[in-house]
Image (cartoon, rainbow, N blue to C red; front, top):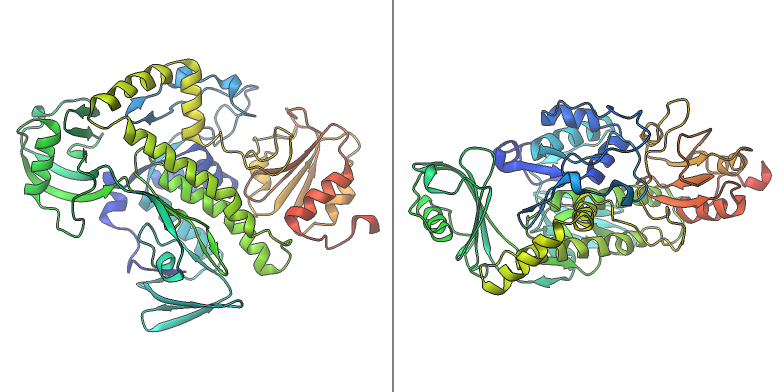
Length: 484
């Protein structure tokens, strides 16, 4: 792994400015690879994720989040309307920081034998049908595949010639950690919309966010001075507030852009390298984790030579629409936060709708990621969704079976109908059979390594249908089922 930063961590990642909210689907990703407990510990979270797992019904979420600063009440979420929600250690989101995420992922990478070469900024890329050569500093690195995860100003994206399209910014945003000489001057409310912009007061003392609707006119190559930040805060707050000192500060915009494809030959993109948008709602990190979960196993199968034809192309097909939805979710929030009468009128309507039970449930599904469903060509309601936390009668949970990164076949049928078929993919699919506490009306399910249900059968599952699904996602069997 080539890493541009010379050292791990930074003041931004450990500081309150680096605080991020992981959605339920992102927490689920850490859980399914056995990294949830290390993440919670690194994040300073003391909640027991295994509490209430014996409950027959899932509990309502403890928090939901907000849309454009409009807080959603978790008590208004209609749990019965959520698709296939079962008690799980990954029921809710987690507040963490980028340092914690980086340290947990770095430790896992080291355990797997990955070498992270720091201070290696990519400066050139050459690629053909068979290989890619990356220049970083004085060194060249030859590879069969390259994945650019190098952020919103991705060198890999630019050097490889990806088309990057979208919408230009409405505002310049600022986030700062500062000493405020007269904090009582500002409103104590967390989010404040004013006739000239907006400002946010975070939980940490002196942690301020600002939105200046200047069309993104601020030149981000300029140094952020105390005088400039104070002038912006005075303008958007309508006060004479004074900043006596600025510890950290950064600027951003709501420019929303996305590559037209996530793959060009042997070069792929993930995370902010593939899409950028306003940080409103904290969707960026979660979107990147979703990209990585979707791409990682597909690229591994390709490298090891057992991927079925076209598997790698499903990465763009599945993830590009999800990225486009997040960009629109971000644009919608900006649209109702603009300081003009039309936007504020729309905001009032949106607030009323989100205050209803259906509206809150809709918002939770969007923010948590539970509304994500890939179109895998099946009408079965489970297929394409993230698999619910199915639990066997002996206490074994789905999360116990997904940690090595293989697919999982769960067979609830009384005659264990899929046992022989699954053995054909033994090195790629882990087969587990038995009674489960809640079958959700199915007799068997096939789950991809990213936790997505690839196939589901009825109480007397069709072996041939299972074998077709296994071949579609895991390639030809090592042993033909008919030979068993």
